[in-house]
Image (cartoon, rainbow, N blue to C red; front, side):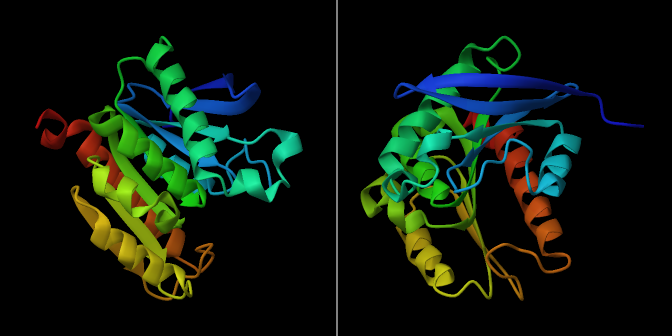
Length: 221
């Protein structure tokens, strides 16, 4: 039976920029996950639809958001500015807390590459207002040790075993975290997880983490 899905085109203002996004809400949704895109290409149609489909089948909504305006896409200083990106993510979370279909839902965050640093910085500021975090091929080190130590949301770091340099950066960041945490290294996977079966592992890990910490006993502690 096809999954019943409500899709909303959204525009969220922050820093005098109107961020474009798409909100996907499966029937009887139990939470919503913000996917932050700060890369050099726009992706309102998610490139890793498989991961999104796995989350949707677990009744988790997703908000795909471009944190940078079109004219900012090739400004490296914006792409690398975790503080700026975290501020824009904050505006997206505020929007979700006011939108009629999501205002009662736990909010989680999914970050990749430099976007992971912004996710972690925001989580450090918002405390238990963020249900859970997944970082995939992320640069959590860019969030700074002070921010990493303040995070209370359960945090899952996922990296490919062949992602040279990033594995060690995540290992150091993992040691700095003081929250409930887990570090998963996917053997044989590179930065983009293009290898057969590797994205499936990412999706399975992310789904289990988000479902557990958005709806389980962890949210009531």
